[in-house]
Image: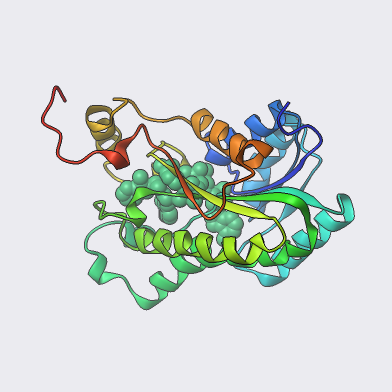
Length: 259
Ligand code: NAD
Ligand code: 0WE
């Protein structure tokens, strides 16, 4: 078991379709102990039964816009575990109105909100947990190709993911001093809660089925398996990087084949 006895704290599990759920399952199935967080009482209600099912050691509140809640989450982990081996950041949010129409129409507040929740939160969490990292700890975040190339309607989230990916590189340099690694997984589109609010998501999924090298969409199990690898000693030499779990879509240019 790749993660026998390792302790993982996971931010961003909302339901059993969440990418964070796929990651939690892969970790649990490979011997890890798990802690989950929830940003509101409404989501806590959905998380509680999943925490039970996953045999989570504990759950705790953490709205990542709150420095106080981040500090108290780190304090809880310190009291419960003393150290942490794996931190998963699977959190993103933008106002729905900013995920449609023209990017040029993004408001100052909408921009700040999306970047705060989706990008700055990784910096804040990485720092709050710094005193707790075990010597070979691994931090993992989730990104999307819309941070690199223009994807219709992804808009301000694309700018947030660009900031998140740059943060991964700078954080890798800082955390690397202590042997701690941080990497991002760039996942292909998956119909999660965060995707269900998006008009035309079905069109995006069928585009990937037609045009990706693997001619299929990826699953939360695929992402969980890659997170398992990144969290394990198998990835001991990797930091600051982006690993694509996207059926190869990011490698595809102009394709004039069967598709
Ligand atoms: P999801 O809705 O299941 O997860 C998003 C999570 O963010 C939820 O658990 C939600 O509670 C949490 N969140 C939002 N605001 C928060 C706050 N203020 N404090 C704490 N938590 C907050 O959707 P998902 O698709 O599993 O998203 C997880 C990550 O994967 C996100 O970073 C997303 O951008 C990324 N991602 C998703 C896809 C996709 O197509 N679904 C593809 C690539 C990357
Ligand atoms: O990162 C994401 C989703 C992020 C997200 C989704 C929502 C929907 C509901 C952030 N904030 C919100 N706010 C809401 O109110 N993905 C990678 C999935 C996704 O979202 C898209 C995509 C894809 C893929 C939006 C437009 C176009 C493609």
